[in-house]
Length: 316
Length: 256
Image (cartoon, rainbow over all chains, first blue to last red):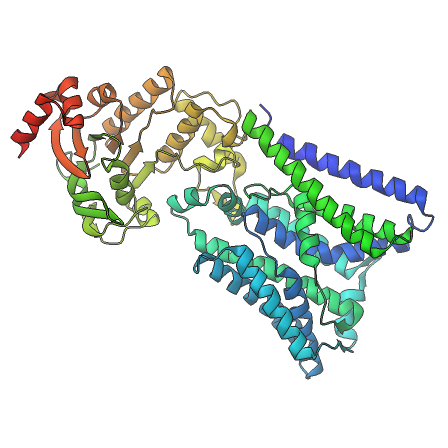
């Protein structure tokens, strides 16, 4: 009998193999690809998607979806930007921005858990409401110029490694431990596997579901902080469409769209696969429109593979 | 453990309707620790609804549940478990994508500073499964890959791991083979011998007569009779449940 662990390891190795293959192909295709500068660029870009995808891994593992992460990213950036411009200290602005993101996730979670509204509908609404507020508050214009302390978050480095990479790797490590080694992670997976079983075991499904949304909001907020800080500007359309990338990465990483199964390590590798691919296509001067198509195709393939795996399991 | 004559759980005048359908009507029963009470009845008699109410999963429209001398008007699964009620549901309430250990210790995990003690729980799960005479080679396999009997074994192991005072089994041997059924029935007797109260729902009437001390017969949401199993034959029990035969009607009249 094959264990969960064995199957997960096989899939993770497959993803890793795919990533290595991609790096080899792109290194042979472009002389710029395999360089420290480009590597840092890929890692920097991956950091943002990784933070979003870690939250999404918890979300999809619990059988839920959050379409508002891109808007939360933009909203957090705007909040921090407006606060700093209004004279609030950097640390306070960052703390308020992250708390706002957490609170938005919490509201999403309360509406889903206690309001019993489908997560797709709730987060779709939040996505459009937040984007509307951003456009109104910024008058659809960028807010920029936040000072060195804030830009350090997105552009500073710890030794040779950029700070966003350090933040996202630490977040991924914490995410992996929480999902696979704690009671919270176990309940998150159980909500996706059989919510009723958890409820009948005396566990407050509503409480844990709400916390999962809040955690996802916080991850999106952290991504918003990095994006805004890195470009030293809060863009009104920042994060738009990022939710689809986060979903694609999470599912490609081996998290089951139906819930009950999730892998943070898989998400990390899938995030690198997607970003290496996008970077490679840019270096090969292929239009960004094709990158959109590619993201869609990857999502389709990942879901097909996941569905086929589920069918095989049912046939056993 | 408490006396076999003092009820540990008492359900009093329980009524429950689902829309216009009456699921339970003025149902009262009690069970003591160390006693096995079987609930028998045809499909739709209200047996599962009754045990869901006693487990806090469904709230009754009226009536009260008294557990260990404390009255519960709004019983929840968490309160029921805390009060000592552990239930194996007919649908087993298992997470198919989760491993055997996670399912057994659901809601009752062993942790240290918030972190799961995985190895310790795996070892304990292996021991629990072994004690049930159910063969599961690896407790890290997802429950969805197990046979019906193995899955039922996992649900029973969960119940034992909770160390409640009253154990409720809804069709405990439904998906089990002969040997597994024997083990579970032996286990039920053993647990009652150790002082646990047991309520079991079963369609298997010979098993009821073999294991239970008392049988409560339900029909169309009502308790129509409560008997010592030593006072009834299999045929009489069948007749009471179906309510269509001469014997069944006769006993009904006696009851009235």
